[in-house]
Image 1 (spheres, rainbow, N blue to C red):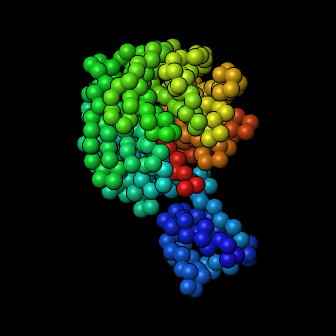
Image 2: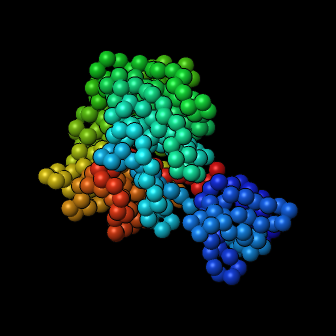
Image 3: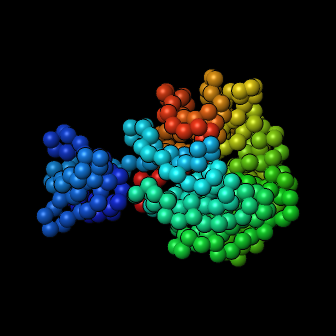
Length: 366
């Protein structure tokens, strides 16, 4: 189909699924689009496949999840199309946080034990550089234009600002003594950073342009994570010490609601349409029994609770492109899946790793 040619050119170096006229399919890395002979080259474990443009009925970009393994110092890569573990990438010690650039070409991994950030090329799934940041870094967020990465340094009480073009720290923002910054999120327009500070039970608001603190918002006990709605109007803060979520109006930087969720919440993700927030609760008991609380962001109420019997922790949550699936990491290893249409777990677990922490998913639209 000739009209596919300009669209395919947009997705060089992306993992693709092609549906063919013959009803066969080809899956792999799109490495070349040849306009002269009207073919594309797809590279996979079987070699290089040359496919004629007119043989292709349709295609889509495959999203990959990157999950950090705190125990084995690796990042596990998961194909979300067939829900299988693809490979694992060695990084520095005790990886926790992870974020992916908007173009999907780089994954930034926060290594808590070595106070570094590993930069992964998502095409080759190899580490291309390592960046020294503050002491005991925890979480990371990347600006919507992909030019800056912001890393919270728990023990240094700072935020490191990384220039993603040069992969160097260009600035360090002091948050305050004994604030212990942890979670971080950026407004969609890139103007403000919201940082949870466990030491002061508050959220620090930073002007991203001049990197100065412009406000502090009291929230619940031990705020651990934060997410901002796609329209930028609300920030949702997970308070693990009080088992609540604080809702912040980002126009006034005030808390407008507090939502009771499951025991010891540690993670949160918001669907692409902004209508629901999924909160991972560590849960009570030894070992704990994990749950996920589903929040309706229009009413700021819990509309569903997903129980994972016998599973230890829902450490981090990421929503797949399209919003129909959520993926969560577990302390005991393995990545779980949630059907966000009916809010049920999709068995089985994807077997991989041990003591998994952060998770992020590559975008499929650019």
